[in-house]
Amino acid sequence: MNLGKKINNIAISKRVLFTTPSHDRNSFVIPDFENFFGSKFLLHDLSEINDLDNLADPQNDILKSMSLSASLLNVNDLFYLINGSSSGIIAAITAVLSPGDKVLIARNCHKSVLNGLILTGAHPIWFLPDFNKNWSIFDSVNPLQIDSYLRIFPDIKAVIITSPTYEGVCSDISSIADVCRKFSVKLIVDEAHGALKSFAPHFFGKNAILCGADISVQSLHKTCGAPNPSAILLSNGSINRQVIQDALNLFITSSPSYPILAAIESTINFLSSDKGLDCIHKLIKYIIDFKSAFRRYNNIHFCPFNDPSKLLVKIDGLSGFALSDILFDEFNIEDESANASSFLFLTGIGTKKNKLNLLENALKSILNSSFPHSDLLSSCPLIIPDSAFSPRQAFFSDKIVIDISKSFGRVCAQVITEYPPGIPLLIPGEVISHSHINYLKNKFPLIKVIR
Image (cartoon, rainbow, N blue to C red; front, top):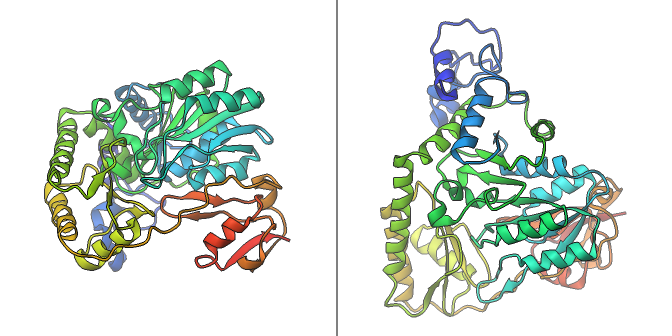
């Protein structure tokens, strides 16, 4: 019996529950809540009652479900995450690193990595992947760059990279994993945007674990059709399973959502089936057809080197920000994000042909119209700031808020990031430069600094 069926059987049983949650299997439903979720959700919203297992110490149905999912994805260990990929990233860092340990991190990381540094007290050594000015995005991580840093800093304990990136750029994980093994360093991969790799590697490439990473984290809600914040943590077994579980237990709630757990299980089961693979095939066909519709246009470009589910687009003479505004204001279409050169549309299992047709028609209308050319706006400063304190030291220091125009040379005491995608511009402990001030002054007039 799978976890979903077990939850459903208990939900419709006549068992009398004097337990949380207090709605008591939808015996009481707040009216506004029912408009959002319906009473069926509450019927299945249970707690750690007899026979239902416990996410913090899985021994029965949850453990069996995770073990089956690990087998379907051909990985050694798999953990369900009900707090999203962010919790998995923080737990991975906690499982691998101790206070004072050095960790090599690609600067285009998600802000959850910074939270992990603050909580563990690990010391980051940052590096910048190459930047593609044509698209205003970071390129893949060069394995030789990793090798160079590990030679310079032999006491590094782990490497953290993001692949695919927010825009879908994938790195050569196999080569990077080989480098990490050569130096006995653990490799953590933020694979939040690459969950479809686990189900259709012939379209998206193998997932990071099958390529040699020690831990990766994937978001099932981003591309796989699961509800927010469904995610999974994958491991190759090089780190003791209980160590990972203990780390997760620091960050997960003691009242987990069983409907979300069932959704994670159902998503993995479905996408591992022939029907699920057929859905992925259809998505790829829709995307191919969509791009083909623009063959006769010379002034629209699709990024050729990224994950096929990420539509990174640019039109000659228009910034990504201008295109984003036109699409929203004129066609009621909202993209995922925009930058100085391009703009990004995320697709997934729920992306149907008619939705892509609407985007196709809107883009063709823009291409056939005379919208004024726009200046390409500046991007975030591509620098690694000087560091005065570790992220943890800075986070717990005395702080004051000052005008950003007066912050040159001061030590930042907060995470400053543009979201999406959540890549940090400044983190606690870093020294504020003139380039930071020039970029942020019209967006971020006040800043928190160490007193």
